[in-house]
Length: 274
Ligand code: B30
Ligand code: ZN
Image 1 (cartoon, rainbow, N blue to C red):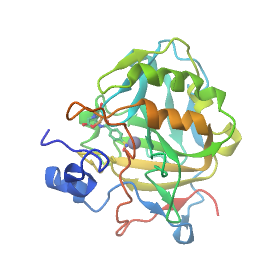
Image 2 (image 1 turned 120 degrees about the horizontal axis):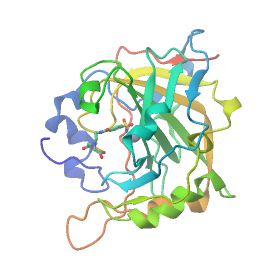
Image 3 (image 1 turned 90 degrees about the vertical axis):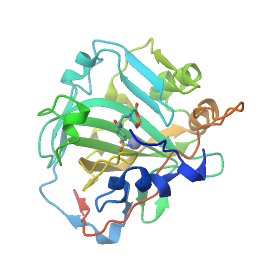
Image 4 (image 1 turned 45 degrees about the vertical axis):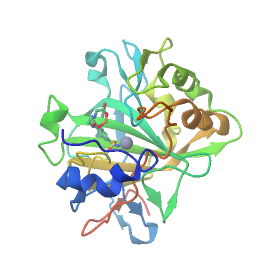
């Protein structure tokens, strides 16, 4: 709804600093992403391990990869298939069901995470978007302050590829243009895209928003300390293969599809451990 939003890399005239002109919520007091200042965290002993269910099983249906014009999205081809992929515990106010995952990245020249750590951006960030099981649709969830839970994972670049990302990286060439989608041939477990299971106890928690318009302030954010490793060439494939929607005759590579950190205002960021 409303006008067209974009990233500065597409056109500074519709970039993040203009989003609040399209959607007033984007100028709200609980916006995401934020800088995570590790000197100002509030430790919360109630933030135990998140319970991941269905993350360790190959889903019954196929994964679908799509270029939605601002990122590459992985979802299940059948809506029903994600029924049993849920997160709960870890101080979350409800159980949440996985909807989709997507990425934010930079350019050959720079990093592209959305959340920053002590003022530093990391190379890329993975978001796994979940909906509160109390709600049926995204539209319904957007009407409730705890409607969505997004898990954020930073990436760290390694010289060797992460084989668990081969299927996604190989699929990118099939979704190089906005609107493209492809069903992936191989099935894989969601857990293989994450840091190792034993390394998920450290995370940051705060109340925020979607990082794209309409910037709804309905997201319980969890950002994990432990990064996922990705090969330099694998990361390069995101930057070099995907394109934003074409505004004219020339293709525009999909780069720097991140929103910069927003003011924390009166919010606190909680840490699962000291
Ligand atoms: S994020 O994790 O905060 N980056 C949405 C979900 C998660 C985030 C941001 C947005 C979302 O579901 N947005 C509404 C759906 N989209 C359609 C789409 O295919 O992806 C509408 C839109 O923004 O215009 Cu993009
Ligand atoms: Zn995102």
